[in-house]
Amino acid sequence: MNTASHPILVIGAGIAGVTSALEAAEAGQPVLLIEREPAIGGRVLRNHHYFPKLCPPSCGMEINTGRLERNPRIRLMVDTEVAAAQKSADGWQVTLRHKPAYVKDSCTECGDCMSACSERIPDPFNYGLTEVAAIRPYHNDAYPRRFVLERSSCIDGCQACSDACPVHAIDLNAEPWEETVDVSSVILATGWQPYPLENLGELGGGRLRDVVANVHLERMVAPSGPAQGKIVRPSDGKEPRRVAFVQCAGSRDVNHLPYCSAICCLASLKQAAYVKEQNPDAEVTIYYIDRRTPGRNEEMLQHAENSEGIRLVKGKVGKIEDDGQGGMTLRVEDVESGKILDATADLVVLATGMMPSARRESLPFDLQLDPDGFILDQWNAGLFAAGVSRRPEDVASSVRDATGAAAKAIAAAVRSA
Image 1 (cartoon, rainbow, N blue to C red):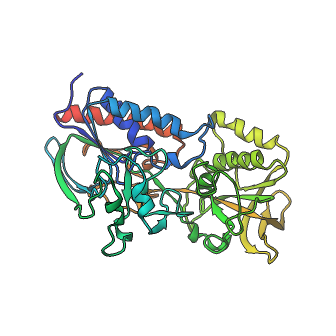
Image 2: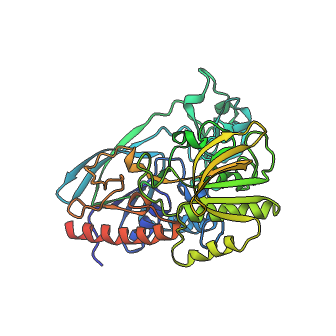
Image 3: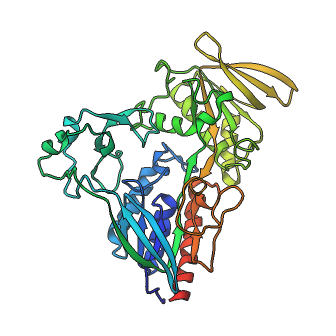
C-alpha cells in the first residue's frame, strides 16, 4: 500500500493509543507514539481484572509490549508531551517536550537507589492510596523497565540515590529538551480521568475515609496494590461485612456529569463479585438508577442477581453520613417501594464516572469537542480521536475504536502525501 511521507503521531499510550500505533505500523506506516507518564498502559493496567474475560490486563499488555519491541516503524517516547503544533500543507509540525531523564536507560533496577532514598511521596499509580520512595519502579508491570524519580520531592542538596547507584544511571541535573517533528496525521488517545471523589461531598467523598471510588477498590483488590489484594476499610484496615455500591455517583446529573459513563454498572457488578470471593458472608447491596449491561455483558448482571448475599436495589442514594458506631448511614430513595430508607454499610464504593482528559487538559490543536468534552474527528485537519477520548467505553470497545482510528489516520495521511 501507499505510505505517508511523514509518520503518524499518536498521543497517549494507554490501550487505545498502543492499539492505534500497532495497527498503523503493522499496516506499513511509521508511527511516533508519545506518553506523558513514565510508562505505557494507561488506566487499564490499574485494573485488577477487566471484562468480559475477567483476567489481568497485564497479560494482554505484555503481548502488545512485545509487538512494540519488534516493530521498527514505531518510535516510543514516554515522559513526553506536545508543546506546540502548527498545521502544515501535508500534516502538522509538532514540537515535543521531553521531561528530564533523571534515570538513564542504563538503569538495571537493582534497587540500591530506592534503599538509599528517605523521601516518601503519594503513589500516583495507586491513586495516592499509599506512599512510595521518590525513586522507584513506576509499577510492577511498567514498560519501559527503568526506575523513575520524582525530583521535586528531593531534599535540597541530597544525592543519596545517585551516590548509591552502582552503574551511574542517575543524573540529578538532567534538563528537559524539545524537538520538532513533521507528522502526517494525529491520533488523540488522551484517555480519561475519574470524576473527583471530593466533588461528591454529600455522598461522603473526601469526608468519610470509608467512602472510596470504584477505581480505588480496583487497586485495593490488585495483589500489587496498596492493600496487597485485600478489600479492607481504609479507616481501620478491617474486612468490611456490609458493602454498598452507589451507582451514577456524579454521573447522569446536571450538577456533575450529565452523561452515562457506560461501564460503571459493569464495574460494580465485577467488584461485587470481588467482595464475595474474598468474604462469602459479606452483605453486598448495589443501589442503581438503571442497570446497563449491553451485549454479552448481560451475563454479569444475571450472575449477580443469582448470587446469594448480593442485592440490587433500584434507588437513589442522596446522602451518606457517619453513624457514630464505626459504620455509615445511607439515605436512600427506594423507587419501587416509594419510601425513604436508611441503610447501613461498613464500606461504600462510589461508581464515579469517566471524564475525558481533553476536558481538563489543553492540547495545542484547535480541537472540536462535543458538549461533554469528548473529541470529535476532524478529517480536514487530520485529527482523529481513539478510545475514551471520543466516548465512554470499555476496553474491548476501545480496542475496536482504536483500530478504526488507525485506519482513518492512514487514509488521511496517504491522501495528504
